[in-house]
Amino acid sequence: MAETTPRQLDVLIVGAGFAGLYLLHRMRAVGLSAHVYEGASGVGGTWFWNRYPGARCDVESMQYSFGWDEDLQQGWKWSERFAGQAEILQYANHIADRYDLRRGITFNTRIAAADFNEATGSWTARTEQGEAIAARYVVMATGCLSTARIPDFPGLKDFKGRTFHTGWWPHEPIDFTGRRVAVVGTGSSAIQSIPVIAEQAAHLTVFQRTPNFSIPTRNGPMDDEYEHWWKDGYAQKRVDARRTRTGILNRQSPQKAMETAPEERLDVYETRWKSGGTSFMGSFADLITSQEANDSAADFVRAKIRQVVNDPKVAELLCPTNHPIGTKRICVDSHYFETYNRPNVTLVDVKNAPITHLTETGLAWGDGAFAEFDDIVFATGFDAMTGTLTRVDIKGRGGETLKDKWEGGPQTYLGLMTAGFPNLFMITGPGSPSVLSNMIVSIEQHVDWITDCLVAMKSRGMATIETTPDAEAAWVAHGNVVAHKTLYPQANSWYMGANIPGKPRVFMPYIGGVDVYRDKCDEVAAQGYEGFRISQPAKVAQAAE
Ligand code: FAD
Ligand code: NAP
Image 1 (tube, rainbow, N blue to C red):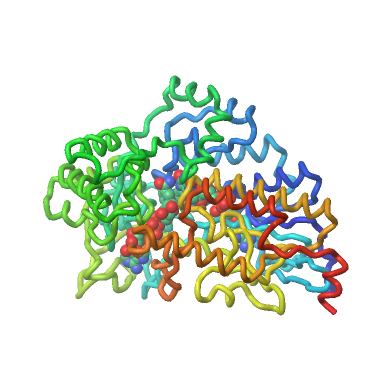
Image 2 (spheres, rainbow, N blue to C red):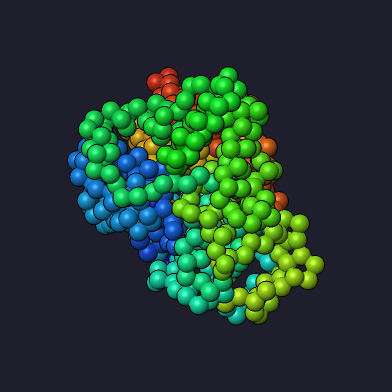
C-alpha cells in the first residue's frame, strides 16, 4: 500500500485533556502550527474517562480551573465548592468552544508510535490507524493517571455479570438498584463512589487491601460570598497560589506539630477536619517530614474513624496503620466511613486473604471464600506517571525506546524532557511536581515554559533541543534526595510504582514544591536553557552524517 504524505506540523500534541487544550491555544497564539491527537471521542481527559458515581475534584473548584484568562475566570460559575465530574467536563468543553480548539483536534485516534529522525531533527509519529504525522516537536500531554488498570485476576473473562473500571466508566447512566455489587479497592476513586453505589445497590461488598486516610470534603453549593472573595483580586490570588508548595492556597501553617501544646494541636486538627478537604495536611508544617508529627495527625483521623463507624471490628479494619498519613494521596470523601454503618454494606479484608479468582457468578478470595455478584466495580487505579508514555513506541536517538530507557524507573530533567529524545516534551512528566500539586497550576506552568522555549528556538533559528545526560542524572539524584527527606517513600503507593507488579520502586514526582520548582525552571531558561543542548539545523545534519 502506498504511503500517504505525512501531515507536517511544528508541534504534535498528544492528548486533549486540560494540558493539550491549553497547549494548543498557546501554540496558535505564537504562530506555531500544532494539532492534537486524542484517543477519546471528546475533550477533558481525566474528566472524560472517570465518570463513576461520586467523581469530583479534591482541589476546590475556584482553584481547580484555569487562571490565564481574566474574562474566563470571572465569567465561569461553579455550582459547588468541589465540582463534580460532569461540571468539570462541561468546563473542559467550554474551553474547547470558547477558544475554537476543536478544529485542531483529531478525536478517536491514538498515537501508537513516534520515531526521531536524526538527519532532519524531527519526529514521525504514527496513529493506531496507520496515519503518519511529521512534526518538529512532539508534546506528550497524555496525563499522569490515564492508563487504567485491572489486576490480572484469573477468571476475569469468565464472569458473566457486568464489570466496570472507575477510569473507563460508560457514558450512559448505570443503575445499581436491586443488584449485588462488589467494589474492589479503597483508593480515592473507591472512596468517592462507594457511598453513592451503596445508596442504590441491594448489597454492596467492598474488598479492601489497604485502608486509606480520608477527610470529609464538606462539599456544598458554592457560597456567593466565598466566590466573590475569590473573584475579587483573582489574578493576584492565582499568583499567590503558584508561589506555594502545592499550587493551592490552603492556609498552610508554618507551625510545627510537636512544638504545639497537645490540646492546641487537637484544636487545630479539629478545625481543619470541620472545614474539610485536603487542607487538613496543612495543619502543621512538619506532617510529611516528622514521624512524630505525622503520627499525631494519623491518630486524630483514626480516632474519627472509630467515632463514626459503629462496629468496632469494622472500624479497626478501616484504620490505616501501614503508611504515614499523606504519603499516599490523601482521600477526601462525602460520608465514606458512615457508609459502613448501613445494613447493606459489608467490608471484606483481602490483605491477608487476597482475591484469588473470578468465576462466572462471582469472586473468590482467601482460603475458599466466595460470594456471588451481579456487578463488579474495579476501583484499582492506574499505571501512573509512566504507563501511558511507555505504551507509545517512542524511539529516540539510535533507535533507543523510551520503555527500555526507563526500565529501571523514569529519568528526566525537570520532568520536561529525557536525554536521547530531542524535541520530545512531557507535560507534568515524572520528575516534576505534577500529582503532588494542583495539577492545573502545574499544567499551566509546563505549557507556558514549553511555549517560551519553542518561541526562543524559533527566533534563534534553532532546530533541536535535548537535555544533557549530566543534567538529567543530577536532577534525578536531587529528586531522590528531596524525596528521602520526607516520609513519602515509606508507603507502597502508586507514587512509588508499588501498585504495579514488577514496576521499579522509585519515587516519581518531584517533592521539592511547586514554588521551588518553578524558580528552577525559570532560572534554567534565563541561563539560556542550562542543562539542555540546543542545535542549529546545519549541526543537526552534520551530527547525522
Ligand atoms: P489527562 O486529563 O489524563 O488527559 C490526557 C489525555 O491524553 C487523555 O484524554 C487520553 O485519552 C489521551 N491520551 C493518552 N495517551 C494517548 C495516545 N497515545 N494517543 C492519543 N491520546 C492519548 N488533579 C488535581 O489536581 N485535582 C483533582 O481534584 C484531581 N482529581 C482527579 C480525579 C480523578 C478521578 C483522576 C483520575 C485524576 C484526578 N486528578 C486531579 C489528576 C488529573 O489527572 C489532572 O488534574 C488533570 O485532569 C490532568 O490533565 P492532563 O491533560 O494532563 O491529562
Ligand atoms: P488507587 O489510589 O491506586 O487505588 C487503587 C485501589 O485498588 C487501592 O485500594 C488498591 O489497594 C486496590 N487494589 C489494586 N489491586 C488490587 C488487588 N489485586 N486486590 C485488591 N485490591 C487492589 O487508584 P484510584 O483510587 O483510582 O486513585 C488514583 C489517583 O487518582 C488518586 O490517588 C488521585 O490522585 C486521583 N484521584 C483523585 C480523586 C479526587 O478526589 N479528586 C478521585 C479519584 C482519583 P492497595 O492500596 O493495597 O494497592
